[in-house]
Length: 223
Image (tube, one colour):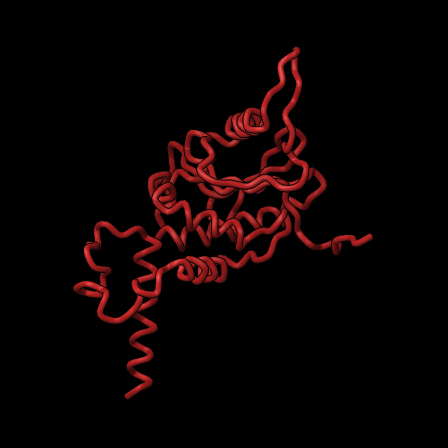
C-alpha cells in the first residue's frame, strides 16, 4: 500500500472567504464534509453542511486581520484553520478577503501557516495588491487556477507566492485564442481591439503586460 511521505503537507479544504464569511472560491478534499448529515429526522445536503461549517469558521475569525506574513490559527469542529487577510476596526488598506487552509488537528500549525501565507501572497500578486471581494469576484477564474496550482487532491504542490502567480498566468494564457495574441489584432497602446484599459481585469492587464514584455525581448534579440 502506498503511503504519503511524512513531511508532505496535506489539507482538508482551501477556502477564499469575503468579510462576511461567504465563500467566494474554494475546494474540499478527501472525505471532509463530503456527505450530508441526518439531524432530528432531517437530512442536510453537503452544501448545507459546508455552509454550517463556514459559518462556525467565520464566527471564530470575524474581526481578526491576519498579516500576509503572519497567519492566525483557530480551531473549528476539531479541525485546525489557519488564515491570512481580513480586516478589523484598526486595519487599513489591503482587502477583506481571507485565504483559509483547513487541516487535521494533528497537522503542524506552522506548516499550515506557511501554506496560507504562500497562497495569500500569490493571490495578492494576481489581484494587484487589492484582495477585496469585488476584485476577487472579477477574477474568479484566476483564483480557481491558483487553488489548482497550489493543491491537488489535498496534496500541496507549490507554496512560493511568486512561482504560484507565474504558473497561474501561464495556464491562463493557454486559454487565450491565438488570434487574440497575433500582431496586428491588438488595438491602440497594445490593448485588444474594442477594449479600453478600464474594461480590463487585473488578470488581463497582467497578461497584456507580459506579452508586451516578451515582445520587447524578441525585438531586442532580433536587432
